[in-house]
Image (cartoon, rainbow, N blue to C red; front, side, top):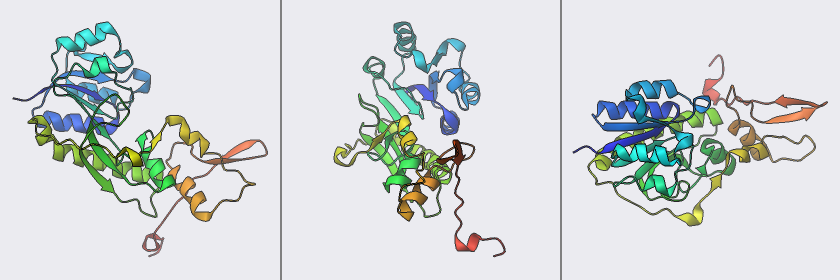
Length: 258
């Protein structure tokens, strides 16, 4: 019997995963989305879920007793979180007899939190995607499945982000048959090697100090990690004005005229 699912999602990957679940005849009984001003692909996700308005919830209100009660009334067995940016509290997690799982675009325990595509380039840490159980921490629960993605010399924050999107889709699709039948494995994370970043951490690497000495690799990694148009990224200040930098990286066989 297919578990009753409460789906929490934002962004394109969440939409693609929801479409996949629909194609697999998954039983989605409730949906949690970001508030309108924080949504990415929110309309597409809501339309695909095709649920009654009383089964769709605002993620910013998950700790509200009335919302928890409404979700409890749906009798969900399993929570599925995909690129959902709100921390899930214990009162919420206790609603699911089969637990809550999360799809995170990093090779956990490396790069928990935000901007894993940036930090894999900056810090030289492994990149990838991980499907894991949600516990009281942030991206700290037992691992169900994961896959590593090579970080190439010509990758930018943008190109690596899109590689991680595809990796997320592949990892979830491969693991779902085991999850839905209750046979998903659980592997403890190696916390000794963990890294964790907040959203504000990128603000510390964006300013380029024109009077400081940088190693070539360090500076190139900052510039390429923060190259993701149309986002602003790294910059220096000259004559009181910010000048933003974007780096183009091409392999030799990609040069014009070859």
